[in-house]
Length: 399
Ligand SMILES: [Mn+2]
Image 1: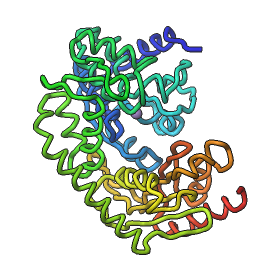
Image 2: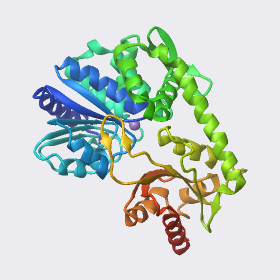
Image 3: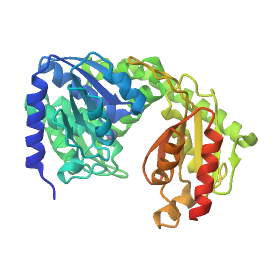
């Protein structure tokens, strides 16, 4: 049962907590929802008198958490990231405090120093009812009142990753955005569409979302996340269009190179799994890029086998901009279910990707997380082939 009253009560508790500090480390995800969540929080926290240092993360795991906990802050705020890792976050607090505003599947944890504000913990769906940015906006609205209606427009952009009409908690941000004159709902060719006013220009929330994601994720190692965040908090979004086009073109060029690689024997096939490793081909681009490429391929039965699990890998950089360097050497893996396999997973005839790969990755001292048809993770360098073979072996047992 949904419990908005209790959620608001917890939000007020979080506001009281935050007001007790004069600075915070703000950890956010590298897609449009992560960027808009962070922008809402930067504006809100600064209004509450805190100085904020933002850190954009592609993935949250043990090693990144160690780097975060070594930072000289007493308050850590996670947006659009963190809920699935709340026990690990709590473990590393050492008497300090954390606030999580996220919509990814949460792990419940009792820790007096940690507040985990996730729609799922209050009867809402994290996949449908609230984006990370909406959770940040609910915090902001309660802390600042409706005077900051333009922050609602940012929440609407963050919610573009949720398909269809905005409902649930997302509708609260939508309503505020419309009231502030920053959002319009229009009837598009494929149903309802939302337009957001950014610096005087009306644009589709989906277009802005796609552009912010390209800037922050493809441009992850080129300062993209900070540029995107600054544009949304201080203005200047229109000056980024050339860089966004450049990054989108770069990604298309790299996709063509990957297609060439796999059609020239780079795609290795096992009984149930097909996989490839691009090595350093995507060096300098954020590691989400391999996921975008794997998604594209999963819809192309002329390039890959439609009934086999698709695993795509690239070398993972050890530098986390603004944070430091992790110790381990990893390959980033993105796994996708191509069309035919997707039907079999849907009907229960084949194991869902995340639950298949999580335990195997762990056995190789890596990790995996995600959903039924798509997941990603890190596997220690040197064990990639053995990992893939172990996946194939597990499938030959269960299929
Ligand atoms: Mn999100």
